[in-house]
Length: 386
Image (cartoon, rainbow, N blue to C red; front, side, top):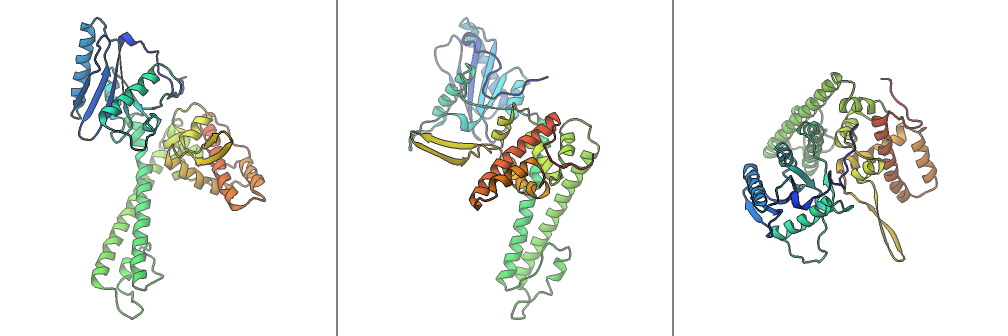
């Protein structure tokens, strides 16, 4: 059985004399590469165009310099911050024998001055310092992101695309309603299939038809709305088809298992599995931390206060779990989690209910993780037949 990925610990201990340590400060126009080369006193710094082949040639040159200095390189450890480039470079380098890591950008300590200096050169120094501490095994020096495969990244696209399309659908509907309200027309439903054919019959309070330019604009928006709805339906149909022919193990099996929980639909189940539950997380604390559902205490001297959610995790999971927690109270009234929430909020004010719904979301996410990983059904939770 493989061990869960630990972002705070390096895979092997650091041997300074045989390890080439490299960091990259990446931007759209260029890459700034800094390194510590064994046997070489200087700290080389090289600016490259975004070219992976040129980077590989640079690493080969530094290895040759180390060998000439009598310190042959047996390990090449490279790191860069997570950003718009994603994980493709890390996968490409690992396929060519380079130990590549991706650093969580918010885990790198920076100076706290309000007007601190910030350049790519200074950023490479900070990255190199953080990466060296992580390689030495210093706890919580920085955190690494788990590098997913290309297939794992692709599995997330349907759920994320559907979320984007649903937002676009809402924007178009609100835009159409706002145009009509500006003309004094109310009660028209742009979501109806025959909405485009009913525009000509609409009249303003003065008895006038919709002005021609506004009418043309609304027809174009309705056409966009029709296309968006068709794309959403296509994504949902493709998901159901994939789940129908999926094997009995793996992420698709997790989705089918979660969809058996009353109050939890296919869309929410697919999002949770692809975003968090299929990941190789260590324990329940890592699950809650990944979703950003943990607190941020502020304690110093006599001061004791809670600053709220950290929001450092996956925003999609956090929003989905808070919405699911409210639904869970309606569909799973006899479950232990729902009873726990009601006992805590029976005589509480509205603000306390909002705070505790986050605690319920955190507990519920952990229970769902145990359900798909170990098959432990939460106490009192109703499941649909398989």
